[in-house]
Each structure stands twice: as C-alpha cells, then as structure tokens.
Amino acid sequence: MKIEYTNHPQEIITGIRKKLVRLRVGLHMAKVVYRICRNPFLCINTLEKLAKHRRDYAGEMIKKIVHVDGKYYWDLYIPGYKSEAITKFFIGEAEKIMGEERKTNRFTNILIAITKRCPLKCEHCYEWDSLNGDETLTLSDIKAIVAKFQEKGTGIIQLTGGEPMMKVNDLLEILQSSKHGTDFWIFTSGYNLTMENAIKLKQAGLTGVVISMDHFDPNIHNLFRGSNKSFEWVQAAVRNSAEANLVTALSVCMTKPFVTESNLMAYADLAKKMGVSFIQMLEPRAVGHYSGKDVLLDESHEKILEDFYLKMNFNKKYRRYPIVCYHGYYQRKTGCFGSANRSMYVDTDGDLHACPFCQSKMGNALYDRLDSAIEQMTSKGCHKYAASVF
Image (cartoon, rainbow, N blue to C red):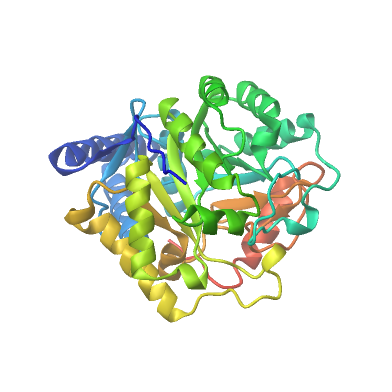
C-alpha cells in the first residue's frame, strides 16, 4: 500500500522564534495572574509555583511549538495560544495553586463519548461491551452535557465514541451551539473525515483531530483495527484535516510487541512525513476488549517509551519531528490528572468515570448533580497514580 503525505504539513517552530513565542506566552500568563492576585508579591510567588509545577510535570522546556492557523500549541491537553481558552487555563491553574475554588477552569479537558456506533472492531477498544448497542443519549442530551461542562469553564472538550464521525451532523450542531472559549477536538479512526467534512467542522469551530494509527505497517494496523480500509482512512483523514487547518495528531496504543526503539523511530519518521503536529502514546489497560488479558507494560517497556519521549521532545536532532505526548511519563512524575483532578470521562450513557481506562461509574452527567460526582471522584482519586498537591 502506498503511503500518502499531506501537502500542507503543520508548522513546527524551534530556535529563536520558539523562544519569542514562549516569551509572549509567559508575559500573557503573568498579566493574567496579576489580574487575579492584585499583589505583586503574591503574583511572583504564584508564577514561581506554576513554573515549578511545569518542571515537575514535563521536565525542561520542550524544544518546539506547533503553529496552526494563527495559534500556538505545545501540548494536546493545553489550549492554543492566543485564545480565550488558554486565558481560562492560566486562571484555573493559578486559582488551584492559590487554594481558591476554581470557578473559571475547573477542568483542563473533558472526554465525552457521543455515540456507541463504530465501523471497526479494534483490538484494544475500551467501549467494547457497549459498541454498536442502542443509543442512550440524544443530541439534546449531549448538548446539555457539553453546556454543563462549559459552565465549569472547561478549556478543552474532546468528542469521541465509538466513532464520532458516524454522526458528523450531530458534531456540527454540537460545535455550532456551544459557547465560545472552549477548544473542541475529535478522537477518530479517520473514518468519514473527508475534505468536505473537515472544512465544515473547522468552520463550525473545531480546533483539532486526534487520529488513531496503531502501526506504521498498513497491514498490521488494519489487523489491529479489524478493517482492511482503516489505514486508508487514516491517510485521508490526516491529509484532509491538515488542509482544513485543523491541528492534527496521531494516537498509538503501545502494545508490548510494538515497543522497540526501531518501531518507535519508524512510526515517528512516518508521522513526520505525514505532516502531523503531535504523536500521542497510550499505554494499554486491561479494560473493554482487553479485559482479563496480559497487556500491561512492564518497566522495560516504560523505559523505552520514556527515553523516546525525551529524545523526540528535547534533542535538537529531532526538532522537526512531531511533539510527543506520553501520559504514562507525566503520571509517574506528578500523578494522574483524571479522577476530576483536571479531567474525567463521560461514556455513551452519560455516566461519569475517572478516565476512559478507569471505568467505575460515579454519577451521571445528565441526571445527577455534577458537583456531587466531582467531589466523590476527587476524594477517591486515581487508584494507581496519586495526584500531586500544590
């Protein structure tokens, strides 16, 4: 199968230009924090704590920034600069550090599954038990859930499924009816992400697309996804989303056989040629279709992935490669941001979970009081990665 590349790659900024953008971001954050504190000493103290938290979370400063459609991005889970969403993000983080109730940005990101429908049978699917069952939530229900989280000042809402692109008209209405100030993303297999749909979604307010590509070998990816068309969908989706000026990312499930240095580099080389902005590395969990299976990575796998993450993001040799996001690395350093710390998952029934991989229902986003569910989830925390307190 011939690999296709986009003619409209996302722009990756490094060197002096990147430093100038970082300076602008830092000045913007300082102004935001000062407006909250109204005290120069408290402002400086808060900014120092924010800087320390960033170092604890990601280590040194990543050597590159992505520029798409006039905005700058350095993480899949932080809104783009300059935007209303990034301002709310800074306010929320400052309020957390100052020990105040987070009124502006209670959640950095919320993942909402909008449909059970999916054309694939993926090896690792965490919604396997409900896949292609009867829909529970109506479009009005989903819009109401989105509105609830927007009222909490959520900076990023990620729409998933199932396969959300099976309901592209619903996606358009969700985007068009939502308030400004939130970055919206779609998590997709690439199915139905035509040029026409990509442009419509962009015009409706979509920020970016995370497209699942679980191997650089088309045949192995197709086997993993249960369809001989899946890799073709990925290629078309990457090309179309980039052409539509959507921030474009690839997501890969890091199975045990895949985690080798040579495989990771082959994947990164292809991602670079495809012209995407980010690579998201996800560790498998024994839930959904993987329930009861020996899929968890061991320390040797984690070491390979951490070394790859550091090399891709901090070694100048790889400055033109996509930025790598690796949740396992962050979690082992500072704890999990799920469990209503900064994020949670809403499944296809509207039920609330700590994250897609820690499925233990703690209320319903449509019928229950959101604050009660948040309190319950926060007090329980992540069963594996205790969140840091600052």
